Amino acid sequence: QVQPVESGGGLVQAGGSLRLSCAASGRTFSNYVIGWIRQAPGKEREFVAAISRFGSSTHYADFVKGRFTIYRDNAKNTVYLQMNNLKPEDTAVYYCAANRRGDWSSQNLAEYDYWGQGTQVTVSS
Image (tube, rainbow, N blue to C red):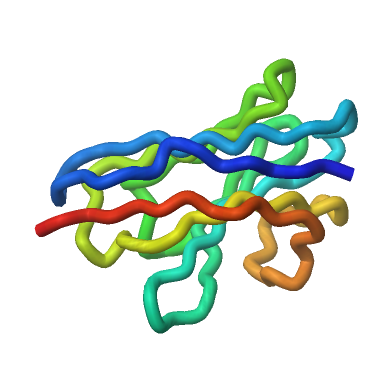
């Protein structure tokens, strides 16, 4: 079992950058696919990006391709989401979640077993 904890959110102007971090407790961190999911006000949660257990494969939602990069450092039990060229529509609470099934290419949020509390990202125009 892992417990993700997000950090790095904040307020940024459109076109700016932020890097989110997801630190997870537990010695079996590398057993999990890690994903980032976001939820904007009044909207349902949506998949953003995921990374395979050892970081060799990644998957992105179309609306962040070319702008966001997900990567991980298993020695530090941490996954990162580098977000560049942010847009006002990226404003949301960003959640980190762990998937023990290992399907990094899936956007099915029901496959994620452990969730963090989220970190707020606000992009001003």
